Amino acid sequence: MSIIEERKGEEVQPTSVEWTALSDLSNPPKFTYECRIYLLREDDGRYSAWLADLPGIASHGSTLNRAVENIKEAFIGALSVYQTRGSEVPWLARPEEKPTDALERWILVDA
Image (cartoon, rainbow, N blue to C red; front, side, top):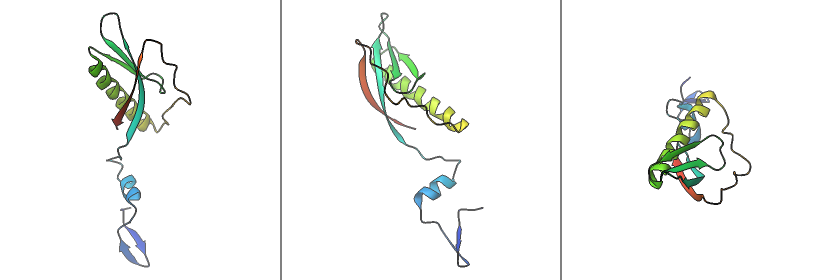
């Protein structure tokens, strides 16, 4: 079925932007996620990064900025898996407790 609706025998384009966007599953809509991350400088000078309220999403980088970019990529990859499986994203109701020596940052991720 096309994205054309029939009303009283006439064909008209749907007016709902959401309906149109959702009808094109080959190009799913993008969202901006606000993510709380923790960053920890390791003994070797690299940074570990992980999402505070989504278990299992972690990465690292040689610099603070690289660690942030890598955690964004890890999050986007995980979202893709959840979407492919049709699964809900298992956000924690409460974020993981921040380690004393970790930095806390909020990042925006378009996915």
